[in-house]
Image (cartoon, rainbow, N blue to C red; front, top):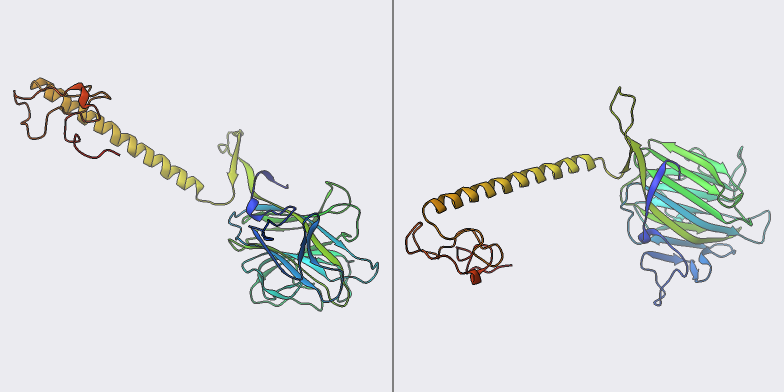
Length: 343
């Protein structure tokens, strides 16, 4: 998984057969338009007939800032020369808004990854093709040129009608890189498609899949979605000593982890100091009372007695004071906490 060394599975953004529960719904995903579910096989976004459009969207936003998403998909159809239009994967701030970009709205905000099977114009590369675009919410997609001047990377990959399980892997490390790979040649053989450095996606996006057919058609299926929160391994060492410390696992989700750890340590030290001071103060009082003939103190109860065995209202050091019976028990014996409610 690139530089990702550890990951945590996220059921809220993963999808597996049978896809729906007894109420014909999924707890974490919505599907609509022409999409339907075959509980033994897939979520089919479009059938291989013209003028279809379907979508599948996560119900919850993806809160982890860095992630790995593996998507098993399938594009198939009877035709060997005319087919389309394709499907797209979305990591965007909006969801379930139908439109002209492979079934999703135009002027999207976030990441779109297009698995395009139909060329609208001539290019110096072949189709099917996988490409990526980061939308700012204001720029329209250039349909006539298949977004050629807008996409930031791409690769030609014959993922249609293969005998190999086809998968798309998206790795995003916040403020570092976006890496897209595809499996279509052989099992567990991943082909690098494109990589973008120093990229930042919108926070808390939704994950979605859409597909569309026009005059030409294909079946577009989502089979599984497996999402993980991503962690990387960083090595830290002192400058100039030529040595590196052992591996330190870090989530790239937040730059505030160090400061929060320092704050927690500081709080513990302050709390420890307060406890030590309280014990010292209590010991001084206890020692002073013994000098004046005070008979209460630690150990007068069944569970540690308490500090101060005198009944309320008795003068400190009075000869009339009587040692608290052992049956009084509790922290404080027969002192001021005797009649208060204990939690």
